[in-house]
Image (cartoon, rainbow, N blue to C red; front, side, top):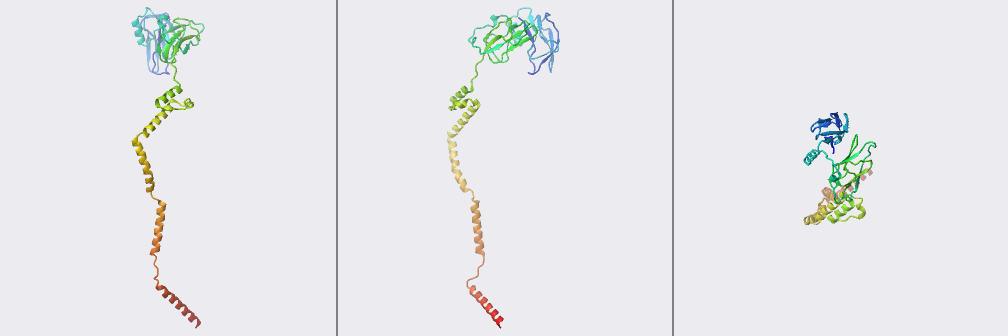
Length: 311
């Protein structure tokens, strides 16, 4: 069993660690706490130390390299077999402890043959000796991004992470087995996601509404829920007697409000009629007894003018 010395968690997802000076060589004996290499980030510079007493087996980096978070830098073989307490202490410090044999990782469970996700080996160097390290047991529940196993070559480590949340069903390769490119490593079980159609039908049953079957595929769950909630609000308003009485009162007020609105055109016509009446009434008229007198005067004046002309 070998332990990997890895880049610790970085402050940013896109940040990479710059490897400074490497203080050890392959085959060198080290003690717990000995400095192995220096690491630089955008904010800090620190040194990585050995977890246990042992021998540096392989070094997977060199000075000047840039490594991503949790990348393996070197491997150390402990001088003595680790106790259970020592393993638990290392695991609490985010040190991955690989299984030494298939008996440690193979477990009988109900989903062993129910895997629906296959995880295969990436493209590997053909000339290097590749072997597998396993870090989780069969039947274990894992989250997306958890380290499942790694493939160790002479110069590099290929980490295999869970791409989905699920359960480890079965390892097709055991610890220390030689691995080739494209080989099936492990199967996982992921619970199938519920389709929109199924979930929409459940929403209909809960809300007591129905939606045509041909519309379910083109409509999202959010749209169906919004429609059913709106319908529920409308039903509540219709069933509310206070709301109903308010609507009746509003209907009664509408005609009254319309009748009370002033008719501007009629008012203008009435005002014009009143004005005409006032003008006609106030105009002075001559008395009826004066008319014959005026006619006589005009007639006499005419006769006088005629006699004057003749004589």
